[in-house]
Length: 360
Image (cartoon, rainbow, N blue to C red; front, side):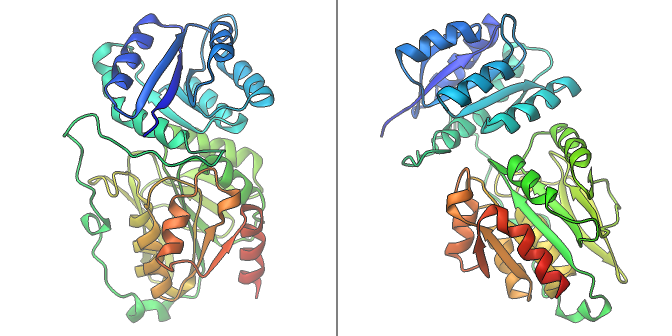
């Protein structure tokens, strides 16, 4: 199978050499070049076009955002941003996603070889996913770097599956639950900006690193009519408000009487994710049942597909984003295969459809 050709752009020699070593361990990846700044990178791209670029956004001569703008306007190539876990770093990375980067990987504040090695598996995974984005390419098998891969647990690890029918008579308040991964930051922005201030309460799992979700929520809150925040344990699910699960924490819907709230908790990785969409959707199927609407958006893998089916089986209305509007048609595709989606819609039509349905 053809290897994914990668160009590494980072001004730190230590980071470049460490990333080269990490990526070279994966049999499906070939590093075809390294560059210390965007000017050197441009010359290397002229010599050989990579399938994916890893990009540090904080660099001298030309910052990563400026380079990304030029790249996307002249020669779009899938980009995975590697950004530091600081407020400035996370905010810049979110700007990069808005400009067209496919995904982001959190880089340790201190760039030691040992700390950088911890992001190796995640980076390889995201590079291979990125290679399938934007243009239709044959998916590449995900070969682990080592045998130390965590087992792929289901939502059973967090919440047992039971029927919700016995308690639904207590409330008719509608809840909208959304799950997304690769490409989801821009999909969610499109979706939430269309939502009016009287929309039902929205709860969201977006696969993102820790700390990035807080900045992401703040950016959305500044541009949306509704209120958007990173969820905290016990937050109520209210009309005109959206709660985003914190990175590295699961989020579950709970109910006390007729009032909904969220439970933010630690726990094992589910479908190799934390937060996991399946965990959220299962909790919604239990505590909201037919009073819920489920939406699964762009992303790689199958997280959320089984949970969406559980929601549908409990009477919820479920939607999958269509292939044409997805950055990566993975999660919606798996949901559609399971017949978990009541309807399949383009991204721009999902919010208007929900608004119309809830008004009726």
